[in-house]
Amino acid sequence: MRRGVGVSGRSGQVHTERGFDGLGSVWGRESEGWELAVEPRRISAVLCSGDLGQSQAFYEQVVGLTLSAETIPNHLLFECGDGTTLLVYGRPAPSKADHTQVRFWTDDVEQDVRELESRGAVFEDYDFPALKTVDHVATTPGLGKSAWFKDPDGNTLALFQPE
Image: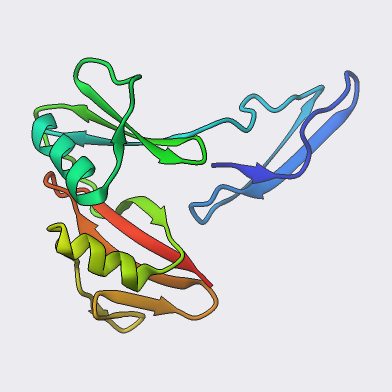
């Protein structure tokens, strides 16, 4: 996701935009008469699943999401609030991602961990020099609290409570 300054330029003017892509990279570009190609709109996180029936049960019953009426064959579209969605599509090969793929924002991560555990979610525990979980929750000063769990396909999901 690119965030930066400057949205459009007038013909004949040079426009410079710099920003942070949310993934740790700074970017910039200049163009003449450039306008932002992607306007702020709703977004969707996308995951894959080898068993859509199992995924639908997990996201509805464990996570508590609602399947959207916009769902199409071989896809599950879940409403997540504030116009965002989670799209899970079927494919035979599992995801090879080894990082957090979806982050759910919360006001009380500890309470949500307890609630999701009561519904069957299994939370990860970590003990690294820079990150340690206590009761499944890692606290990062200046950032917030996080807890991680996996869906039936091994996709890593997180709860995040900002400071």
